[in-house]
Image (tube, rainbow, N blue to C red; front, side, top):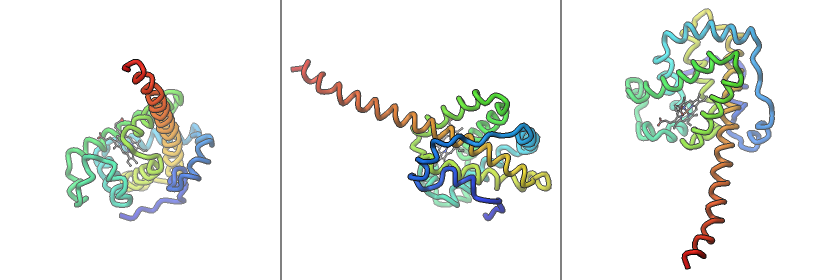
Length: 204
Ligand code: HEM
């Protein structure tokens, strides 16, 4: 289950401390260099061949290392035996959805406005799934651990840093989307409570 991953900056960007999270929210996410974009795209060609396998490994590892994430999933929260999940059709399908998002992100690395829209919308949907940003950093860590053995000697510290930066970027924008949706919902709730007394007046 262990995985040699250098540094801890991937999870630090969305660590478990909400206060630090709030401070970091205003920082600009790291940008990828042209060279990093190139090596990510090259490595993706290899990862792509094992896309379903990576999706499953990534989520089983996520649930092993952070069981609190499993509780967010209606489909998986009651599964006690994580080994069973390795053959679960539902986890395979979910892993593929997430991997297909990563694929789209890689394809949009040269069009940052499109990537931003995609990640913002994903963050909004994660508010609806009740999946807090404090967990997002874990996914990148588990992705890196899952792809390392697939890339074998093609895996380098430089490539690891490039993938970390991409995940930091995406999860930063996802968090913006999450917070935006949270704010919208709060405003809607305030508006509807303000409207309720008026309705009562007209009914009398
Ligand atoms: C880098 C981080 C993550 C990425 C890229 C990601 C990506 C996705 C994608 C592509 C979907 C498919 C549905 C959609 O497009 O809205 C999805 C669904 C979902 N995600 Fe995530 N996710 C991330 C982190 C997390 C974490 C950490 C959790 C839980 C703690 C989580 C919980 C969920 C849930 C509950 C769903 C809905 C599942 C269903 O279909 O019933 N996600 N995610």
